[in-house]
Picture 1 (cartoon, rainbow, N blue to C red):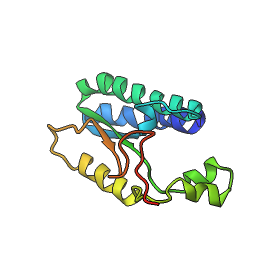
Picture 2: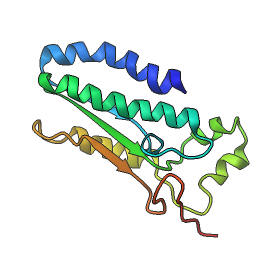
Picture 3: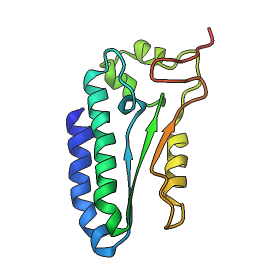
Length: 146
């Protein structure tokens, strides 16, 4: 998780930012999580990696704004992806239980918000978005129909 969520973000940013700085324009959108906004039990490494994404996003924004490079973050709550299957090491029943009885976000929902972020006029930076399904109020509060 640290390699993908933190080091991956750093490696890609290191490759793309010099060109943006040279052009004096660009937009970086980092994929955070509600787990980077509030910690929850048994989420120690994942939460830490997403808190790091939040800190990196904020400091990159400070470092890059003089160069007209926007830096934004989208922080989704529950999104139905293969992440739960990976998280539970292939246990399909346990992974399906994460979304049981509620309507989670989809990858399309997240993509549409990212598109909206990057399609704003040059003078607008939608800096941080917390994107939740209607059934989710926080990292640990999810309304489920039984």
